[in-house]
Amino acid sequence: MATTTKQTDDKYALKEDIDALRGDLSQLMKDVKTLAEHESKEVSKKVGAWSEAAQDEVTARRQDLESQVRENPLGALATAAGVGFLMALILGRK
Image (cartoon, rainbow, N blue to C red; front, side):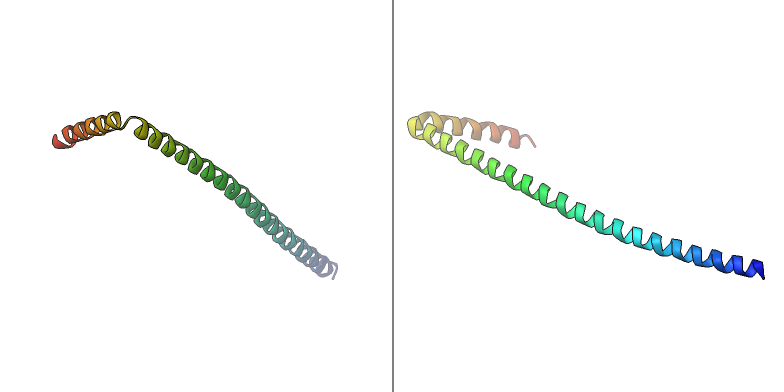
């Protein structure tokens, strides 16, 4: 009889341990989800900032190029012709 009582007690203790483990795992999953959401928001903010900085840089470069073309249109035309000639040579070698 003592063995049966001991086994029953062990079963209840094991059940309590399993229930506690389930609770711990559930909390761990919630914590991981919260952390992932937080990190996702941080990465999104950084990507947005980088994108904005890249757009600003492209706009500045375009404006610089436009002003150079306005200041020296013949030089820009000669440069474009030279680049076109080089591209024709490179692509014509296939």
